Length: 246
Image (tube, rainbow, N blue to C red; front, side):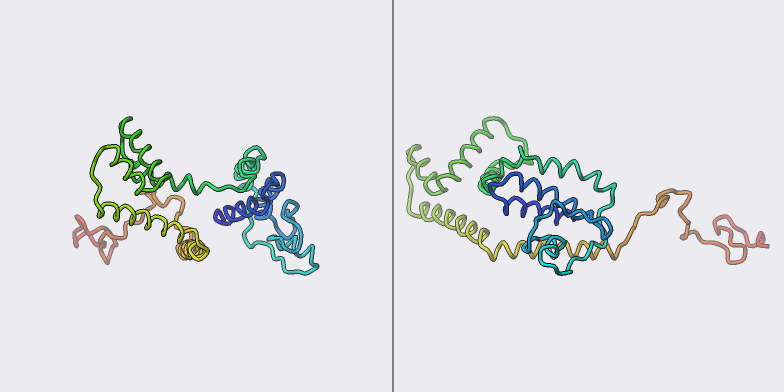
């Protein structure tokens, strides 16, 4: 369910680039759509038309009957708990930042370079953080090869052909990986892998069922199945004498 919310939130933003009110409206539609039942449909915020992802609105536009209500719609208590989050995500002031359809990919890429230099799971001093941040930004903007040449030149250090070749190789690998990860095939593969993980998780939860039972951890409720007992009187064998059997 959470994965579906993320997917449709992304659709609401991408399909309504430049239209903040419609972004907000379709964001509100997510919670309403997943809490709808056959008797109480809530699809007033869902996108309209034959191309809508909402089959209820799609049937309304085409006159067909392909819509089937969810087998497990969100309970009213869940809707009440999640509604403040959806309201915040649908806030038009917040969505103004996504109006032009820009992404955070470049920022995340810079963070990746930065955390490789100064890992965020370790403590660092101020000088180390400043040096690492400047190094990461310079490599990210100019490339490892150009940054290294400038650094060695200003430090009056000699540069040989092997060093230059290695620097170019590192830049080439980084660009090649970036191009691959941004390709349609790579994105499709990531989505498929994520879908398969979710399917496995659903199967696991279905097979396990509700593993928690009230009082399961109460010592007084735990049956001592490992205790050896007499076959005649069924008393514990510890300290038991055969003459005491009745």
